[in-house]
Image (cartoon, rainbow, N blue to C red; front, side, top):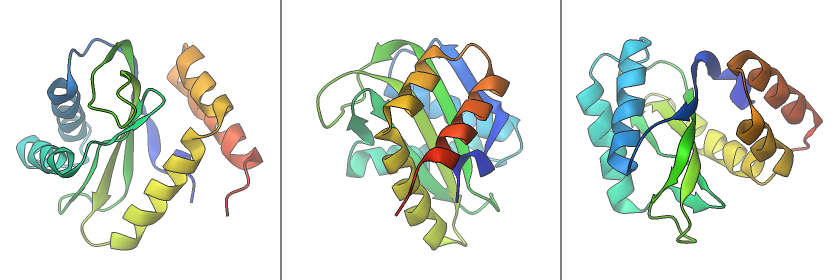
Length: 156
């Protein structure tokens, strides 16, 4: 499984101007509704908020991957956001976040949830991956760079 199998150009946002965690979660919800991933952005937003209340998805090193399941989606979806300026995301390392990987999973496939989280966590440890996101000027080129990184990375 590769994240590029679940990441589409229209779900990549470079230099988004968002001020705080609730704004990011709302943005992800609205994008998912606008792009036909789900129908009701409020349900998705509430799922993302509920997950954050359990434990912050700010994993450290400037990365957050808010995630939730939703009955309206049939496939895993990745929303990649590079923020114009870092924000407080209540991260485990107490550092601000500027890379967001929003993950939306179907309720019907709990296994993909675990596999995708593991894959994204591992990929975020690759400095080439983070560098590609931070330096990207174009969504198409970024997807191609991520594909190259995924193809050259060994996952166990």
